[in-house]
Image (cartoon, helix red, strand yellow):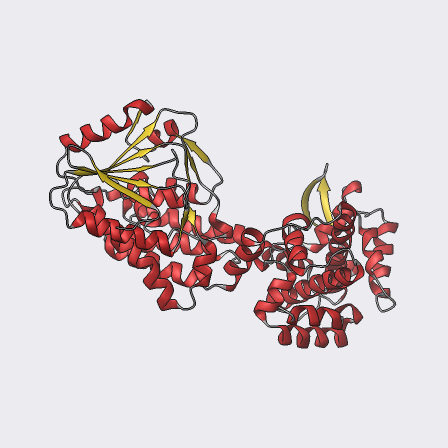
Length: 503
């Protein structure tokens, strides 16, 4: 065998030692092929008494090769690629002989998924042995069994909370929740692994043992069904339906636990295949994770961008109010887009005077509203009253008398239409400022800055990325319609169109 990522050798007890080689810590096509070849070799060797999985550099710092995954072009190639690794690891897991992982150092998601195939997991009693969970809201869910094995091992609630956290678990904490089975001194790892193999010549996972029944994993039990309903509702509220990995995680666990492990793995793979092709997922990954930010934008430009962005967003909210849109609808639309707050709340936090900076000759009614509110000392958060009422700086409710100044229209637009206007106004404000500052020469750098430092909705991957993916022609058409109805702030600079079409 000519393996690049795995070293396989046998000791005097005929125990196979499968050592992951740290020169490549990304799960990609080469890694997958090496694993398949290694497992096929082990599977066909009937004299092997057990398998010890380890890592050559004292860590399981393995993660997904995002460039490789995003390069897969269609549903079939994605599904076939991930399932061939999953099936091979499943083949190893069900071989019948004991598999033991010895664990040291950092363990990331890819390494965890490999470890979960072991029947027994022994960790080093070392402060450097830690399990890293990174919130997958902005990226991918597990695709080689993590959504199926972890809940079956440690429980539903515990697994979901870990997957959606940014937690680091010590070996002791991992042992406490049954993620691992034993902690020993580093010098004892190999001996303990061999001892377990000798004492347990036949090994099965709990999910493959017909004698083992865990009623706590039934998603349709009264306890779990209630948990899933409430958890899905709260996650939907927190992610405003723009972070599909969260929905896919919940679906994979809920549907997978309703069946056997083999069917569950297919469910996970099918959901992951959809997720990897989702526009929002790809946009977030390309801008926030894969983009190699080398250019540094001056702090004063970032500050000016942010000031203009927030003031424009607040002003558009007040314009919508003048158009008769209800304050509650405006605020809900802003939150659904995943801005940090609704535009009227942002206006209060900046002081409502900030809106004046964004107005032109067509906005006399907006200016009049702001002046009327200032006359009654409703200047914003500093006065504990603006578009909202506050109690010592704590937001209470939208000012009940606001409709006396600005009556609501009897017919309200859809929340989707209000969202579109807020989003398009924000994007065109950003495009204007991009052409204004010659120091910014790279649209990808601008996208990165906007979602990381300024507060533009993360799920878009930035305005340039979003417009390209959702359609340049449609964006131009819609912006042109808005410019005719609402003003020149929606007119797109032709230089921006050239930039959008250049990549």
